[in-house]
Length: 178
Image (cartoon, rainbow, N blue to C red; front, side, top):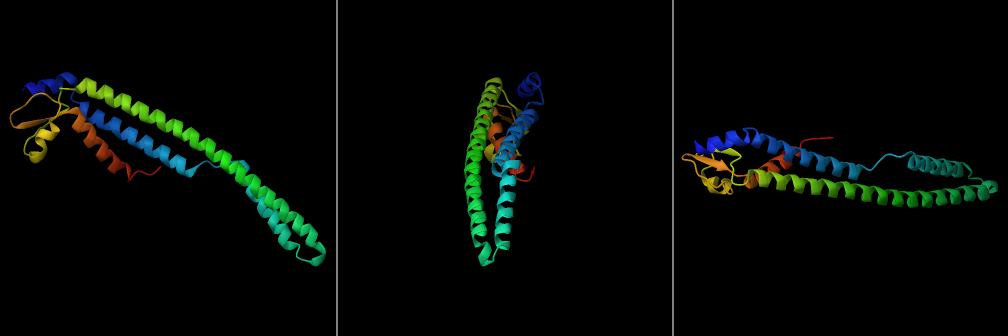
């Protein structure tokens, strides 16, 4: 009964709320990774690409010997536009990467701070109480950091719960599409 009183004192929603916090962090991390991979659609890039296509199209139309000089001029112009596009993409990708890296670091730092707060709040306090038969070989591992024992039940500590929640949320996030 001592463990059940501890659960009631800290709130019976501690385990689901902790799991929810872990899932939110995993979803934010996945969303940030997908944004980083996709990049952003910008008008400057599409304008340059359409100009290059147009110049190459015009140059291919001018295939007569008399218009060779004009076609060569258009091809050179398209080549300079391609170089401009390459420079623009390189600069843009560098800016995007720095931006997403900063967001990733902020997300990681906030995750560490929240996890530390959770560990400090629930250290030596069970997050959940589970029947011993359900977790037979892993009972002592799951009760690490709870500090107490309950007959016929296993008290789940915060660190094993965070590890378990992280693994489950990574598995769940595989199926979520943004």
